[in-house]
Length: 79
Image (cartoon, rainbow, N blue to C red; front, side, top):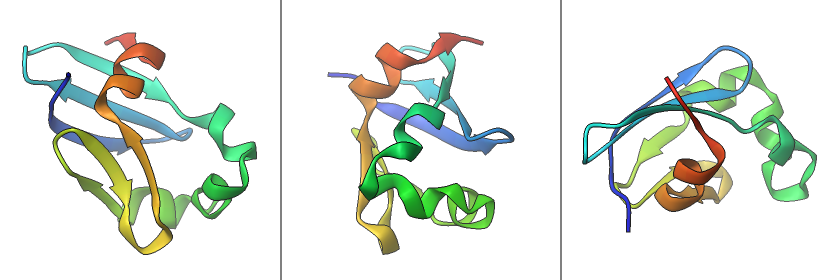
């Protein structure tokens, strides 16, 4: 199981992810924005300000939206 040590929002609905093994990747979550649960994240302010690193996941607490570290690992490209 992957662990996120750092996660930061980037323009264009991307996340800069750093994993416990030191790997840095960029995850584009644009494809998820069509899903009902992720729709609040279409607001750039919500996307960037409500982000929380839970280690094994990233979540947007007030919106009950999350993605696992493993999911981010698989959808992201090496930075």
